[in-house]
Length: 89
Image 1 (tube, rainbow, N blue to C red):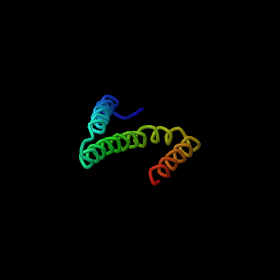
Image 2: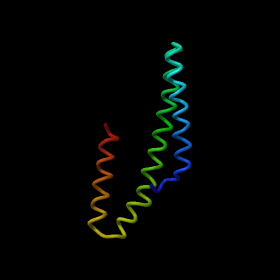
Image 3: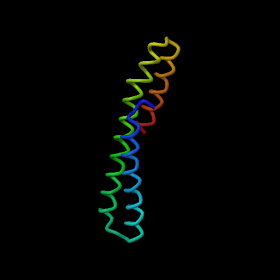
Image 4: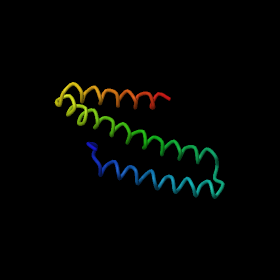
């Protein structure tokens, strides 16, 4: 992985803490909108991590594939297209 691994792990640990908090909020029958706000915060962090990982992939792995030759870049383009399809659902 070409992304800043330590930075991404720190963000994932933050989300893990938020998920634990969400479970407790639900167990405690907290107000629905408070739960929803916490869910949106967790989703936002996950989207940010995904953006960072994909950007690092483009700047690292795809660039390396481009330098390796046409067959490798075609493979990377297929991978990116697959991710775009998943993101657009």
